[in-house]
Image 1 (tube, rainbow, N blue to C red):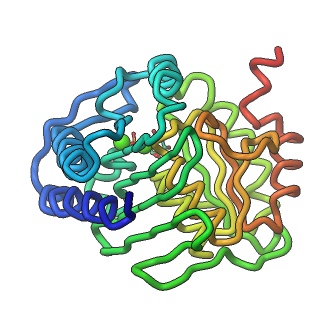
Image 2: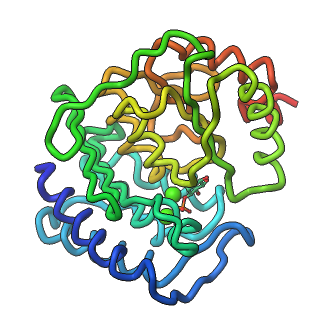
Length: 277
Ligand code: IPD
Ligand code: CA
Ligand code: CA
């Protein structure tokens, strides 16, 4: 079990993604009209599966394109897999909408969980050739060099990112409430369109925090370990420590975590409000 295998898989998929970014793709919609997939997503996942399977034939793989669309199917697939001794969690292209439009902000995300606990994570940005890696207890790196979260102590000095889930009916409205409240309290907000890459940017100190609702294990698993190993904190939007079932995430440099939790609560934008009635 080595991080090199995950890096090899991510870079091999990344080569294909880079080659195809300016070519015509067949775009299909999945769960909603905002949830896109192309043949490149499927081919990239196949490449990753082959590399992982060759090195670890006895490990299980949970890949986005192997799961039926929509939150229910995602939850069920995760439940069916979460206690495996070795489970690879794969998002072949995180930021497919950007990929389709040629907006160069997307990545490959690969994590390995042992009995539900993330042990290694790789996020690869093929356009910048940036490979973010983390192994539990060994720190986080960017192209082999150690990285750390940023040092802002208050919201007013913080650059914060969020994203808009494909389920535009419920979560988008809630997220907009958070966006309105935080936009006047932070230095500024970014929504660049790849949850995994936003997480990697928190780990690298390029963003102070990131939150988003209704994400899946493959969007967050690798990034969660990167942020933690870079000295940051990852919880759900109510403050429960990260686990692979978290869908409403908050990742920060640690220093502004409580303030972010408080603002999301005050804006009724944690994503848990609808369940609470
Ligand atoms: C999406 C991206 C996007 C986020 C969506 C995700 P995909 O993943 O991470 O930034 O806002 O919620 O579904 O579909 O490009 O893999
Ligand atoms: Ca994704
Ligand atoms: Ca994807």
